[in-house]
Image 1 (cartoon, rainbow, N blue to C red):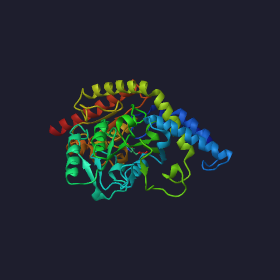
Image 2 (cartoon, protein in one colour):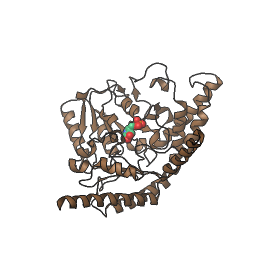
Image 3 (cartoon, rainbow, N blue to C red):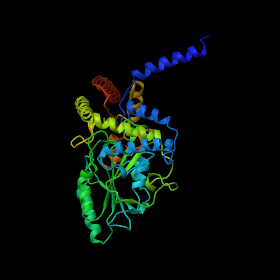
Image 4 (cartoon, rainbow, N blue to C red):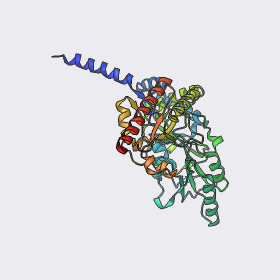
Length: 409
Ligand code: PLP
């Protein structure tokens, strides 16, 4: 009988072999940890102090957090003091969507939240607004937030004498990659004294996004989408005059009173290092991803595949597509067995493969949307991997056509 240690070593070798054979095309769900982030986290784990302590050890831990605050602020061109660290994008969205946001001009808060119809589930949940206070802004068939419809609604609200709302619009959609008209939304809102929150989770570290240029009042970012650790994110304010008057977590005065609780020092340090690394490689990575994206979609176009949001500006790393009659569950299982990791629509719904609210909002019929597959790449994806995928996809589609012909015969 094989000794236990030998068995374990052998299974690890096999695991290693299998892992290196797999092709990861699900970067919008989560990205591999950047080496710089890993190194920063490991170093931070050895820091003993509580960042709130005034002694040497505490100050050393505090230094790591303040350094990361500068690094994360640089992702969107914000002031470091306006960065509030959270447990991720979900918490940052929840924190932003509060009726108790105060500005110099508006101390009475908000009684209405408007969100686009394609927002992430964590925005769709409405934060601390009651469900009757939340309304949706439609999108065009290409998946772009309908600015005309937003402006019409704002005019109507003004005519009714209603208070200006808080609006939440994502910078780019996590399923389609469609880039959203944040600047236009912000201009329309600011003209009437409203505020705009932007979920930039899929954009930060991938393409340039500047908080001042965009006009966003609040921006959500998440570490694990850009090569940092899971479970860390930030809500970033454009101006320090914007006050989060009712913090979700109360207690100690951490994060200038905006979020109580001893900070996740190692996670935050990893986030900071990942942000710096993403900024440094962004220009090159963007070009590389755009060329792979073109290669992928040129290949997909050779068959009956429909690519969603094809005619509008999208992230350089995301494609959402489907073939009529090919169900997403079937495709994902077959692709997984063949060594490919992809999602159907958003990762949060991929476990249960629910119908995509994004495609529904775009008016895509159910028989097509139920087959939607999201392929998202990253800086280390290579041409071969796209070729391997196209090959596997064509085989799947050919198998489907054969079955259809068999049924028709
Ligand atoms: N917003 C968008 C657009 C996302 O894609 C995600 C994650 O999938 C989130 C928010 C949630 O971020 P986190 O996983 O850090 O909670």
